Amino acid sequence: MSLLDASKTKPLDGGPSFSLGNRVTRAAWNVTWLILARWTPPPLHRWRAFILRLFGAKIAPGARVYGSTKIWLPSNLTLGEQSLIGPGAMIYNQTHITIGKRSIVSQRAHICTGTHDISDPNFQLVLRPVMIGDNCWVAAEAFVGPGVKIADGSVVGGRCAIFHDTEKYGVYRGNPAKRIKQRIIQGD
Image (cartoon, rainbow, N blue to C red; front, side, top):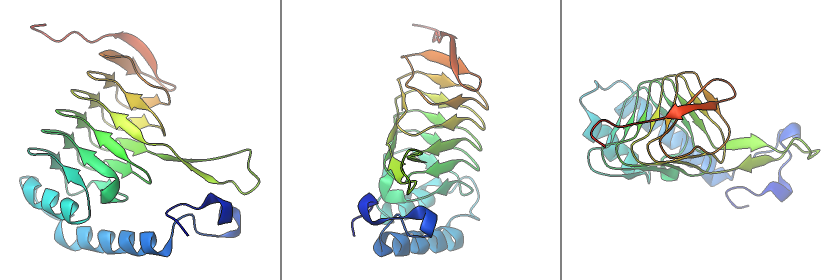
């Protein structure tokens, strides 16, 4: 069975959506993070990046991840230079999440790559990667849904729920998210 073999899974009957190897890796990951990283003080970003790399994450120099962050599977995570994942953020990366250079995912934000096919009688899992560009901000408690591309410079406001791609330097708020203005960077 591959990582996700939808033709053989029946989630409503309790069947697994992921292989045994995937589930064992995630169990080892969760135990390792709990013992070696979750409790660490904020300045130990390099230590946490080292642990993430051991489990396959691609972490660029200067990227920071807080200990209280929850990451589903490190090998499905790429962080650009000087990017930040804040305290309590939920990185539900059943498939790949890419966060660009100098982008921030604030505290308790939720980035989600999985949903279900509601027209399928077996309610199959559907995975869509999320891409967050450079110089973006996903504010506190915001939700970014499966398959969304956050364009460079975009801002997803606090508690915003976004289910569609953004425009470069767009500022979004609400549930569902709506573009409210263009972001203007001082000095541009």
